[in-house]
Amino acid sequence: MTSEPTTDAPAHTTMAEASNADTLPAESDAHPRRGGSWLRVAPAVFLLAWGGNHFTPLVHMYEADGGYAVWQANLLLGMYVGGLIPGLLVASALSDRRGRKPILVGGAMAAIIGSICLGLGYDLFWLLCGGRVLAGIGVGVAMSVGTSWIKELSAPPFDSRADITAGARRPALTLTMGFAAGAAVTGCLAQWGPVPEALPYAVHGLLNVLALLILLTAPESLPKGKRSSQHWWRGLHIPLVAHRTFIRLIVPAAPWVFGAAGIAYAVMPALVQDELGEWTTLYATVLTVVTLGVGASVQNLVPAINRWTGGRALVIGLGLMTFGMASGIVAALTVDPILAFVVAVVLGLAYGICVVAGLIIVQAIAEPDELAGITGVYYSLAYSGFLLPTVLAALLPVMPYAVSLGAVAGICLLCLGAVGLGSRNRR
Image 1: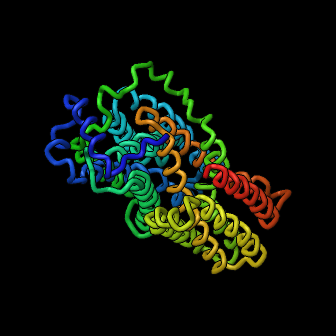
Image 2: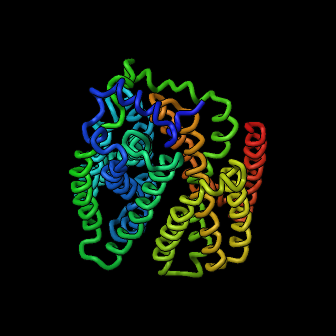
Image 3: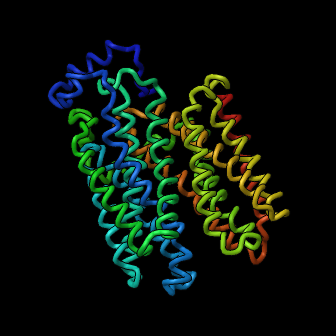
């Protein structure tokens, strides 16, 4: 069973348009093949992702110049998750009942207020915490509701020219580019711009306002007739998590999506910081951009990888993931910045392949009214991988990175075997 739209099913499209003629926007009927509606949503999703990652290059600034303790800076990073999970799960349930547009608009407004709090809260720890929670809400809404909206706008009647994987590639690429841009722009503004404690947030907030204005012109993609009639909290129960494909393929693979990214631009710089000295922050920023940039560049190739491998792109991604984790052991032993950079590139490729391959599978098993919810669960699992660098850092007193990365590579290998077996059985 699949909800993936195809461009060779005009009869189904016509019936859907006829049965929902009073709920679909007039523009989609007038220009059903133009296919540009998703571009009105993409800037908001891009900037919400930007807001999720632009704090990372500034952590050292808060410790060195702001006078915050290390635990306080780490808590600020953790507060982000406090907003992310509700944004992923609650927002998706609300959007199934209220529609995609009002919920994503709310997420964009939360991000704008969050940037204001962060820009004004340099000396107010509680205000910084609030800003980070709001930023997390924005990213969670983008990952669940934003990706669902773009997916739906990448199919008839809004876009009859897109291939069946566009709904997975477009939102994944938009998010990845946003994460990369957030780190790159903020790092540069903080390094060379005036008022580094406020300017990055001001730029992000202003761009978010422009994206919100564009977002207001986008058509709603979930007709009233297809919206859930149950109370939103009942939408938190998502039966698809028990789907055999979800359990066999997504559960063992999803945490490695952002686990790879976290290892690449959090652990790799830590391995070689003694060799880099004052350039550690710049090196970490470069690795962040490179990891996510490589991940973005490979995402459009995932459909071709699926064709070449008989639908096993997720297996290929996890294979690269395992190789990257194993290579990280060598980087930890040699303390070589060049090798650490290469490892980040490999993990970036693995991240890019896995995030799209996983989305394609999730979207294939979901009905329209289930899409936002299961997407939220998928990204919740994927985002749990960001905890991996924190776990490895906590283990440092008893387990050096070379040992812990070996354990991680072993677990990744087991997950690769499970996904490979699940992919074979699925066929």
